[in-house]
View 1 (cartoon, one colour):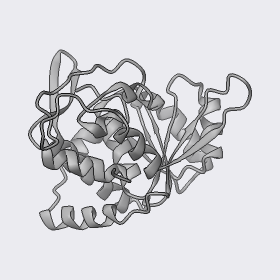
View 2: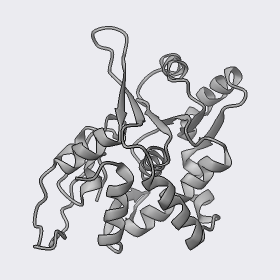
View 3: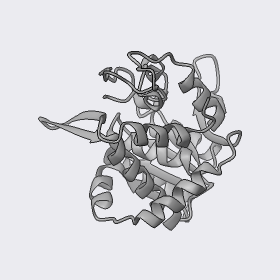
View 4: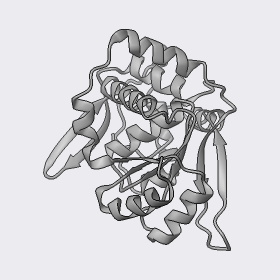
Length: 239
């Protein structure tokens, strides 16, 4: 059983490099990203976190379900940082309170939340904010060498599996929302507990299931229904 999200991500990228990891609709065009492409994008985002000195810090992610959201979340939890997925349906006042309680140092957000980001920056002058909408262009302009990819892989594999990697806030329906702290081991064991389907004797997938994303990605719950490839069961990928 794997103990970190990175181990699962790396295994998937190695075994299913050219298979579609995520399929999503952009305007009227269906975009596909393979496991190999996803891995490269996650490592590029990790470089961004390094450049902004956000490794090991608490980073909020806010926006509708999207490829960018998923890649950012994976980069945060595999880099030794702590992801705070926020509910895009909440009001700005409630979101600011959660970010304050979560000691957020970085903020990846949808363009629609620019006003919220401005309000947050007024109280956190040293905070780093990045628009998810512009992330694809940023990644397209970045280059990452094989040597740097190897270096990041070594660092990520060295992560303590019991270190907190995400804080999920409850809905607060029975009172003030609570921040639930989960480790890499929590997430990885949850993923590996999901039964595989259509597996051959060597453990590879003989056919690729295509589950759909129903619930918002910030809830991290719908994905538990997805069988394989395994790391996709952490969050509701559209594959």
